[in-house]
Length: 157
Image (tube, rainbow, N blue to C red):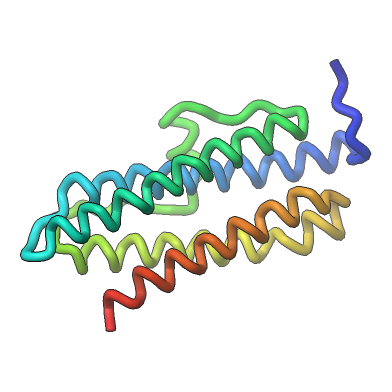
């Protein structure tokens, strides 16, 4: 059945294309945060283990919300690791440092990267593609990533 929500097919496609990149970023960040949760070492292991657990749980919810937003626009969400790796802005680093600070620095960089990409799309989604709903949606995600970046950054002072 045709999607008729007041946004042209061309605009819905453009927004969905950007959201698939966001979904890939969120999924890669989720995986990297799981890695930190599983492999962190050090004197404050338990605190950081729980800290990263809270972050990956939040990212899991975000992933679902982004995928559902893509579907609400009438498009399919990518759902393979191959797709995510092809679409993501993030990179995986060979990790020899399982210290809390090593993980925190890498995850902070990733959250800040997502903040930049989200911020770049807020106005185009609203103005160029006439999709105020998705513009509002990613504004909320931006706020979540800014807060997480703040929490991570606070461990580095």
